[in-house]
Length: 450
Image 1 (cartoon, helix red, strand yellow):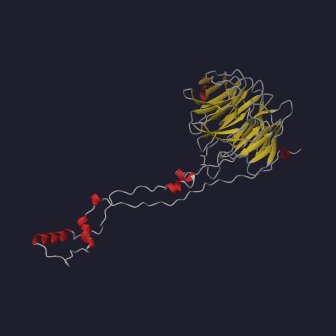
Image 2: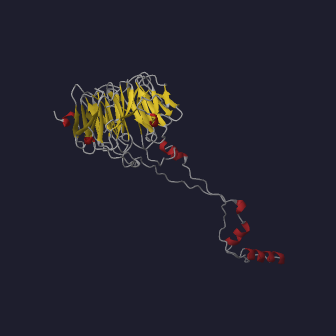
Image 3: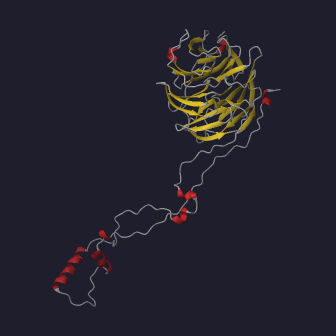
């Protein structure tokens, strides 16, 4: 069977953008009542009489009255044309009771801000046979080259989001496999692959070629990976966290020791100064990059013990650099937010189900979580209120893995039901803000390293 046949690339009809109709209404202009205190009635009478005092059909008047008339004419001999005076501004127009009774929409002020429509069905569903149903592994990642990688048994497949092409890049034997973790390098070309036999392989995706193997990095399987520039950090079942500089022959340049169980979650902060690690021992650690050493450093910044189950789901906030979100397993079911400077827990929300993965929306203050046991859903939350915006259902088993597209709009989810689904949950590229481009250092020629 060829690599492409392992996927069912039948696409569903994509959802179009939803546009809210504007509510048009006619303004009712009320009549205005003249302000009598601001009116000059003598001048009004004078103007109504054509600017002169009528003498026709009038009885002779006394000299004093005639003098008064002359003086009045002199006073009004100026450029004054308005008769009525309105000092106060008219009140704002309001809808009448009759119009309010037409529709509930007229009772509220129209919101000019365009709301984002979130499709409730996946944009596309792909087959993912032999996907391991293991909560502690990390088998899906989406690179900056817009290609996502997924580990299926002993193989790793690449799926190009731009043209839907599929290729197999890795096929290991049973002695080395299965694949237990994958992670794209920042350049979007090199892929790190953790194996069950404790080795880590480096692959060039463009050349479909293995560059080198980091042997015996751990004492057992490598279940978690993350990059910090040229440093590949690995977490194993042996509870160790190791920093590997892939540019040099002696690649181990530092390590952290603090967990007593398998390290199933690893995430470097955007600045590269702090590392978050979660383990099967229910612990969450925050490490300082400057404190790693080759002697297994145990000087963590914070040792956080609030979770009551394995901590795999980790995600750094993109708009608050020192805020970390973490999720607990089936015995915990909570999403917690941490200030990684002080170690304080900012908030804790019980989701009611196992938290498998967390992803921040880069364009809005929102957080997406994937779950298992019992509803197998994706939940979108408003941050920081943690009001539930929507739930996305479709998977029939727990949603173990999630990855985000380079533009931050589309999310890929892989579940134990052996399907991979694409969700347009964070908006469309046209509406999304352009993310600033970051410079990445070129990778060394791995062929020179033996």
